[in-house]
Image 1: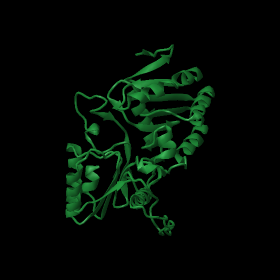
Image 2: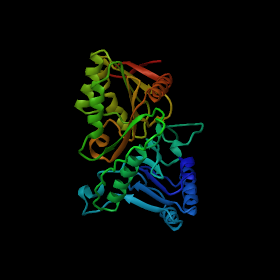
Image 3: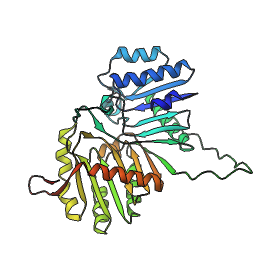
Length: 338
């Protein structure tokens, strides 16, 4: 992310649910200030709840240095749900409308590697760097949230189909990328997952930080496992929200009975939100399998069809479960097998 911002020539748009004014936040702020100094337009969008605790003086300093800063959905008596819901849970960086990063990575020391990791000090996460035509869709996604943060109505302009130039070399093979915007009550990510899961023939592997699927999502996993698909779910063994672990573990009996393999990550807090299907279709983004992620908050995911990236995602998943404990039974308490 720092390297992308350092190479920006025209625009930098950064959106992060979590924003800290710690050493990692200051590292990002430094490259944003440097971009402003080169004449780049820089916009920073964060969520009021995700950024709570940061210093007003620090934010005012960013604004004085030329960075446009917006806060999404602060509390207000006249707002629906008093501003408590929905949240902007997305994590997105777009540079020059042509390249960017999507995933679960926020701006804070939780994502900085280091020894002595705990659920509160270091998180395991996944993000993907995307460049090419999908950059335009990422830019549109940011612009929509920027206007919402300013309580403006905004309609996406129609895409202009550029005529293909004549006598050019065919492009190198590229991944097919869809940028999926999760809006409240639209359930786009949930529908996309269920549709893709129905096409699975070999495997569905999911890593999720806050796993609490609804009936349809749970039945999709159970039905696929009963049809012979290798279904695996990787979740944390410790969490920054301890109550979530108890809810997640209530699903184990149903999953195990259907043949789904369940793993608990043994390291620090696992914050990733990824899916890989049949080794060629990957989803990575901010959406968790729970009601807030799928149906209430603003989320952003990339769905990528590419055999090379899918193989890399599967290898990463295998490496993760090698550092996890498999759940084999739930007889009133949870027994684990190395």
